[in-house]
Amino acid sequence: MTATTHPLPSRLSARGRWTVLAVCCLSMFLVGLDTTIVNVGLPAIGRGLKVGTRGLEWVVDAYTLVLASCLISSGALADRFGRRRVFQCGLAVFGTASLLCALAPSVAVLVAARALQGVGASMLSPVALAIVVNTMPDPKERAQAIGIWASVFGLSMAAGPLTGGALLAWLDWRALFWINAPVITAALLLSAVFVPESRAPRTRRLDLPGQILLTLVLTAVVGVLIEGPHIGWTSPAAFTGYAVAAVATAGFLRAESRRSEPLMDLSLFTRPAFSGAVVGAVAVFVALNMTLLLNTLYLQHTRQWTPLATGLATLPLAVGATVCAPWSGRLVGTTGPRLPLLLAGAFITAGALCLVRLTPHTSLLLLLAAYAFIGIGFGFANAPITNTAVNGLPPAQAGVAGAITSTARQVGAALGIATAGGLVTATAPTGLAHASRPGWMLVAACGGLLVLLARTAGRRTASAARRRR
Image 1 (cartoon, rainbow, N blue to C red):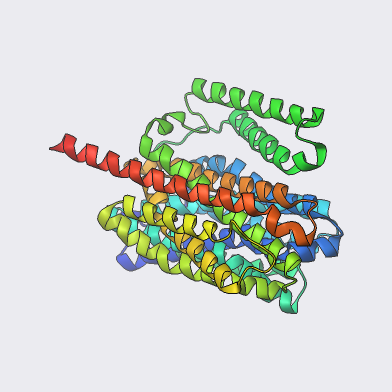
Image 2: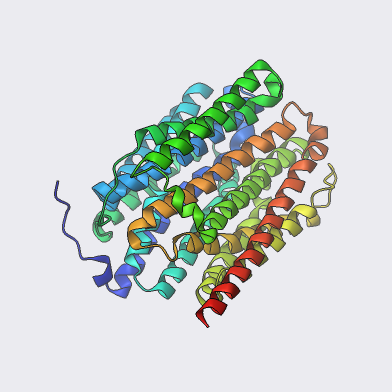
């Protein structure tokens, strides 16, 4: 099959390169928005479909689980069949699934449609990053582009609750999915006109055993976290889940180490910078998703706020992420990843520590300050993590590296939702604030981990400089 002829990315004009970035950012806005927009609508979905916290956790994690599981295979498909082609296919699948979500008559149908959304989203996230990396040959320009890309993605994640709250103020929860239609239509048209087709010089075969085992690992881990509070952590069903997760993990590592073209190139994890970026991606998204879910349940259930008021409360978080993400990209391009990572960890930790003594009557000023700190931290975190993951790798590996770090983000999102839900499930509204305190301690720990990674990155940079001298 012959691809449509387009100019090579390196031959695109500056205007053409930044136009491609804008189209990719539009799709990434959609993926990030649907990761968090549902959070503020969970109480309304629960009332509309008559489902409790347990089912609502699956509404969120069905999307993130499938997205995390399929990202790497989607990156490999894009390298083989063409990045633009897979990108457009992802938009079509995502749009179809969004319509099914909007029309879902039951929670089971909604969870299944959300899983299909995850399949479509998996064809957008790593592919968009690979398109951006291959379109920007200059390292400094690439770092700036990744900063903008991270800014849009951060904005979409942080703006999800605000957008959802505004929609719920005038419409019902189904509007959370109808809103995707115009964005998908615009992205399909713009990608057909402006995005050039590209492939990796050497394509890899699909690794179906690895794909199945990775999906099994993630489903078992997140499933136990969601169902554990209900079935009991020491019940036979829980121990079965532990065993499945352990056996599937061992099988995955063994299978990947024996394949010449594995789903996940485990040798990448021997690079300290890359493995640190993956750990940091998990930590950042655990912190963000725990924050968003705990915030939604606390404000709407404990303080009886409307969805719109709840969304407005996260505005400092969205502003902090939006302002600091491009700044972070510029810092990465000029000084390296250490300072942005250090700032990210410090602000996330500070925001979480503001809430470790949360009560039903915590002052609004303290809440807003905490959300602002966490948003600033999130804004500073994405650019150094993404740039560190892909920097120093050949362009042919950009799709795989981007897919692994995107997988890490969604794994963190799924773990954050499952852990937060487990902390507050079956808790009365008056007890939510106290029950969420361990969650805020975990968010603070995630910030501390970023500070540690920043210090490690600094030592690696200094060591490399000494070796060059």
